[in-house]
Image (cartoon, rainbow over the protein chains, first blue to last red):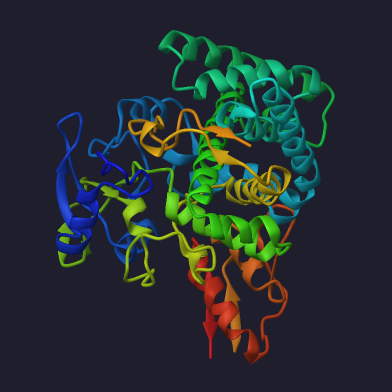
Length: 398
Length: 63
């Protein structure tokens, strides 16, 4: 859906109209199928927690937002497409690395990664008149390196891994380049699992390798799971780093509060508000009804597809009454956003993403206090037609 | 006030730990642990918020 010119941070204007006038309506999708679209916060919340909803992408009425998501969701047993009890069983194999404690333990190393990337950006930028592309120099590398640490990719392999995962995410890669990079990553992860089966470390691939030895995961599930975690955690976080920086540059008094204050609670709330306001997974949450469901006075019949337009839900004045379309890092209920979804599929990586974003935003403006945008807002290449919203390049200067 | 949690439903999101750390913790696998099933009244607002944030709706407040 097209965003309004000059308003790159706001959801498409139709969504706002639907939210106000027709909060439950049917739409025709790219492949001719129809689905119900929900645009109010409370309706989304009720639906995503309702046990009569399925995430199984193989169900006939399942609404696929894009051709690429159809391909991914129908590939193998991935977490996002499982219903209970299978979902919880698979999720529990992965949760150990995403607990609040486990994520906090990664904070010092994440700080090092962010500082290293900023050092490199400053060094390289010195020879181009103190300019850089924040996407290439910070937004893409940081999450990819954090995922390397999480998976247990040895330092000697990190450049290989990073290059390929950036190729997959980059909007300028051809389909062939993306395909090759994906295959190389998948094959690499399989090999890494073999290595970790022999010499386990304290990392996620070692744990998956052990589950493989125990017969709880097939070899292909180990590779698919590794790929899925990478896919889920790279572009999403990278886009938040880039767009969050842009949003703060456009809200300088709030940027200054973050830059000059030493309050981790403020930074944490700012991250929640950026997640609410930017809401990068802008293609909505897709489900299919298993039984008839009454919602907002309408009946969704069993087998019909549903999409909750989660980005406009996070701008719903009934939930966020105080200037919902404005960034406010002091918003008291910012953490009630649904940028990570809701219900059993709420993002597994959310604690890790939050921590990364807290480290980035509490560091970047302090390290580069004169950071500014080096392009006109209207000239920035926004990723409007990718599954996750973002910007392809963010020219900055200092 | 008595708090009940249904551990089987827990998806380990951890919101409860972040908003009401005196009442909720996570085990090694991230599953909710109730530190105090009869917490003081002053924690009601935080526990209400935890219950609202819980994506699995597994926190129940009685009384």
